[in-house]
Amino acid sequence: GNSVTQMEGPVTLSEEAFLTINCTYTATGYPSLFWYVQYPGEGLQLLLKATKADDKGSNKGFEATYRKETTSFHLEKGSVQVSDSAVYFCALSGKAGGSEKLVFGKGTKLTVNP
Amino acid sequence: SQTIHQWPATLVQPVGSPLSLECTVEGTSNPNLYWYRQAAGRGLQLLFYSVGIGQISSEVPQNLSASRPQDRQFILSSKKLLLSDSGFYLCAWSAQGVKTQYFGPGTRLLVL
Image (cartoon, rainbow over all chains, first blue to last red; front, side):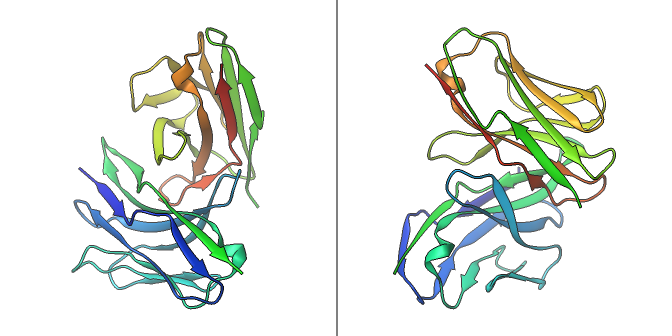
């Protein structure tokens, strides 16, 4: 079945550091890939997405490239801010039981210190 | 633009009491609707999804149920809560034929 594996957290960085959160997936067919962000006490917000191989999703300085050959969708940001502290979820959308469903990784908690 | 609402925001209930959580979507018609649960320190688990009024699919066996009495209203219920029902409940919607899901603010449920 479809599954998503993302790096275990927590991740702690200093402001302006480079961020990478690894995400790999297992899926049949050609899933769409997503990164969602959850700030403390809130719901999930869509951060970025990619719908086909070699697509790059980007938003708010975050980027991720859909790599079919390595089945990966790693999240990167060149210079993190304190306000980026949150939990990040990688997800894929694929067919399961006749319907499109999202499958999530377990989340990676990021803390950025000033 | 579309918005999704959930209420209540926080709920503390005794074991064995009933539950009703509500989710409504504005600004779209005939959305797909989803209920997820996020237990402390864990990922998201899909509980129910609905592709139309009165159409509910359950993903995991449990003492929860869902109903969709109106096009843009999705309700999560229980007749008797268990301690293990504690968690953060998230409602989401997607447009028909579109894979991207958009989430509500969530309801934090504590069963004591």
